Length: 164
Image 1 (cartoon, rainbow, N blue to C red):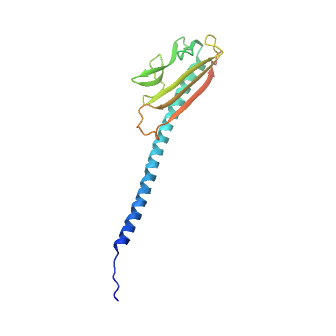
Image 2 (cartoon, rainbow, N blue to C red; image 1 turned 90 degrees about the vertical axis):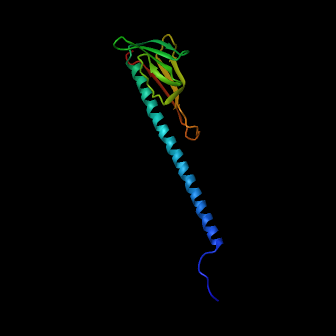
Image 3 (tube, rainbow, N blue to C red; image 1 turned 120 degrees about the vertical axis):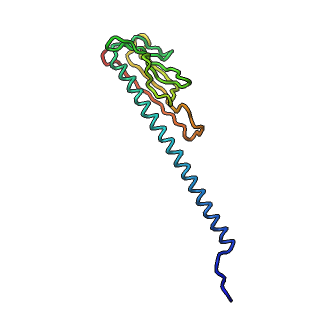
């Protein structure tokens, strides 16, 4: 009896099936890795920008001579600077993106990130505040449409005037 050398059609189908299953699994792993990487990159950017904005607000409040107006209703904080100038801290709409801003025309947050749920609380009251609680949520302004990549971080701080 003579032995035939080569592969049968069944062997080829099995090998092709195994290769396609492995490539499907590898592509799913790659896609998950890319989505996770994008989310981590966005979270890092949001965290850095939020920390910088909170630090700027805290520095303005701590170094101010006094707070001339604190409006929990309008979420505006007006400080009297050491040089006598006045600075308002508020939320401003910049072409559809909510950004933290001061009246000097300087934005405290980048244009690719948006602020939600901005709140200023003045303790014990708006007329004689001692402590100021600032909180907001920051997220990507223009999301990709993929909800797995969307990232939002909550920021909150309480501070008072250093010079009191």
